[in-house]
Length: 470
Image (cartoon, rainbow, N blue to C red):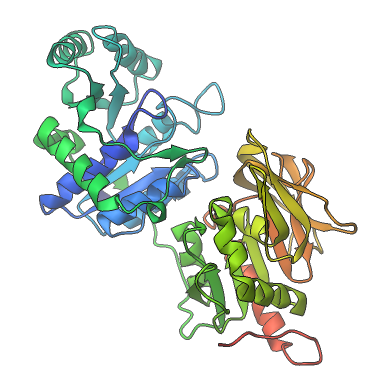
């Protein structure tokens, strides 16, 4: 059988062409027409999905053909598209950019895999008829990719628009679906990891409204919907998930302005494994909720150093929790937060102090991109030795690392803590620069919950493990 879906992949020749703002504007415009819509994000991105969820009200799921098998990519897209009328996939980097010559993890590959037409968003500034050469190149590099149309962005004036539209439609034989003037001033501020998060601006509604207005006034929504058409994918057998009933464990999750890098799939997987997630704020809350374990994800602790340092009561409780043997999983920003201190631009602030190391920020990335890590048997709670694909992106490094540090991962690709190791293990804590996705490592959630259960069963004064209650 076949499942009929309407969908598009939004891509561009290169990054910073306006894909995200265009996707936000198009999503909002289609929703205003009464269309139920979901956005997916290609690649290991946390920030764009926050913006997409703010527009659609639905979780944005990541799809990554480097991490995931073709079947997994199709399953994620098909399963979560069934709940809506229209699905958009926002690409990353350029349409044909990939790690190998064949572009096996590129946006073009994903478009073919999901049978999605592509809308190519082009930064048109500084060009006229030469824009057609860019479109032609994208068509010729992989003729099996269906580029359904082009949206021109940052158009300077009507004369430039007319020249570009005429050239594309003459030489490339595809429609120009819109031309957005640069005077619309629709832009989300960027930083070294990409766009700023929705937690760091009070202008979310203003940005989304401006993006929607720009799309509605300058793009042909009817033609865009017609190009999307009905996309058919083979029906896939549903995944079998055991209902956990009453949660078996409670995991405290730091989720606030400083720590907001979490994959929706990771939350789903933990809940399916039997965890109740209880969220807390590292800057506002003075104590921990009633939990059996902690999950501290990535984010931007370096942007909130004074606020994090000022919450001395919570820092003390977190250190005591680690020392008592509470299971803790921390990624990147969470790792940094658990060290003794963070130094950035000459400012040093005290952090939790559970990990015997300090953090220093550099001007250039220390670790950036996809990684492959090998789990070390007998360290932490990963039960078997295997290679795991993930990613890292950090401008910081650990210094003054104490002696006798144990590691849960060896680096087969990437930097981690020291170029050779990652995943610091201390008592029942694992803290790494590596980010892991549960669709790639399904045992991650199951083994974490099982480990928490084993520790919870031994949580009495004799073994020193203490649950924290309000």
